[in-house]
Image 1 (cartoon, rainbow, N blue to C red):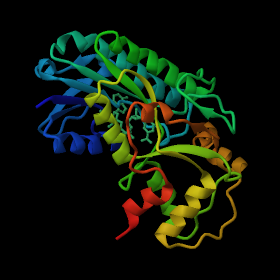
Image 2 (tube, protein in one colour):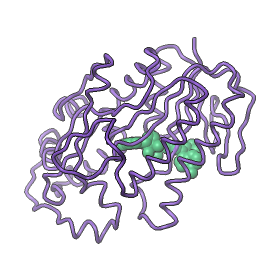
Image 3 (cartoon, rainbow, N blue to C red):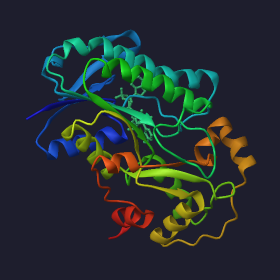
Image 4 (cartoon, rainbow, N blue to C red):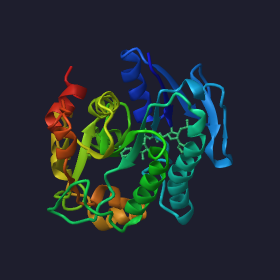
Length: 294
Ligand SMILES: NC(=O)c1ccc[n+]([C@@H]2O[C@H](COP(=O)([O-])OP(=O)(O)OC[C@H]3O[C@@H](n4cnc5c(N)ncnc54)[C@H](OP(=O)(O)O)[C@@H]3O)[C@@H](O)[C@H]2O)c1
């Protein structure tokens, strides 16, 4: 059975993806700065150190590395960490690919927030990068992934907001709604692409099985912030009566990172569907039902 190495495998997506690979009988190793368990391999991309003993056994490499973009205010220092944790670590990974003599396939994580903020437009993978901070990060991150893709076949997935029962954005949205103080943010009409974590993991396995190459938007649907809040309140059986949280207040509280909830983006998943992938979760109700229906 193939052996998978997940760089950044200790995070939200990596944990879930590990289960999907193991269910298929694959052996999984994780590259982490803090090895704690059997199956963890130590690396420190900043000082360019990596434990090399198992590298020749790796068949599939998945790169999910990156400082969390939502957890802290975007100071100059934080922005540099968000960028370098993705770009520098991917450059370092590309330098050790020659030691992965068995490597057959690579999957690089990227973000769908790479397009211009043009409300109403549906972005396909062919559209140019935007010009804000996240778009710049994605542009450099994908250029770094390409250094690996010059050495081994693989794909880049432009991941949208990952919906999981166990953490990430949904966990943050859920808290206020659960306590009855939830409300849409800004006008509430801004749209975000999202993907159920199971579909994302299935998509990664699909990419490997079909040896997909190129860049793919990874999203199950696009919904407005108001729709998300309303559907969430319905599934949590909570009332929703608070007024919208004004955009200016969010910008005051969160600074520039308020764009994560205020930006208005619609993306297309036509390309991955054309490649033959079928999403299990294409509506918010189907997602929330999978999480909250007893
Ligand atoms: N979750 C989403 O909604 C979403 C949406 C779009 C794109 N993505 C992208 O998908 C990737 C995985 O997402 P996730 O939600 O699983 O992220 P996560 O839970 O924050 O995990 C990211 C992993 O990256 C590693 N990491 C963080 N900072 C690092 C640094 N400075 N140097 C080396 N490693 C570092 C950490 O591993 P160790 O601490 O074990 O070393 C961590 O477990 C990220 O790159 C993220 O930007 C996620």
